[in-house]
Length: 197
Image (cartoon, rainbow, N blue to C red; front, side, top):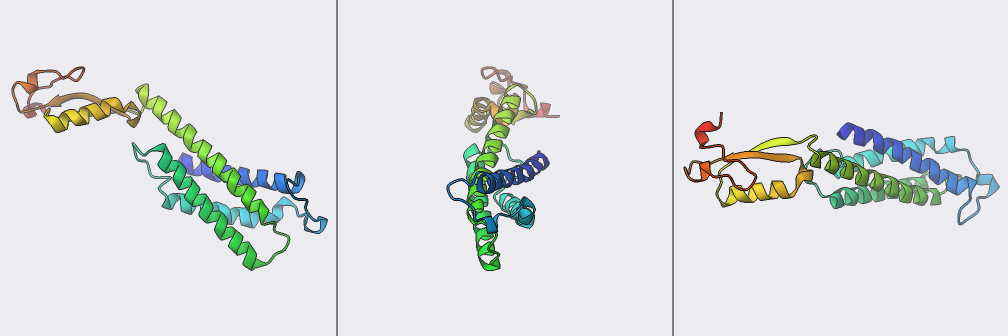
């Protein structure tokens, strides 16, 4: 899954920059381009490559490629915002010092907004698909709870209440003879700790 997210990010970053180029040079959105500065897309390829590398590294730093259940969607979106802002600012500063006048700085604003939109949308879609798959029982790990005391019951309630995490409680074990024989709602009592194997 992290590999798929990485490949998707690389593809979407490049698509976003291509759309930004189209908006800036073909549509000349908000501001016309001086004909002397009208350059082909290939001129931007080194910047696109650098932007892609910086964004992937920033997203990695934000934990975008770590597989972690229960990570809120908001954290993913916030990570995309941080990574994109960092990468775009770095490129704008680099272009400023590079002093190549044919590079349009506003194209980086367009690219940044489009990257935010596309990567954010990709995160929402991924989160939704994973949640639906786990709710339908795919990619679900079976969990055995040890102890039916207050802590064990709290763990059971939390796992049942959040099926999108991808855990299914199959039962519980407890050394208390009464608890080890009494089901808790749909959760089966599987006996004492001697039954663990």
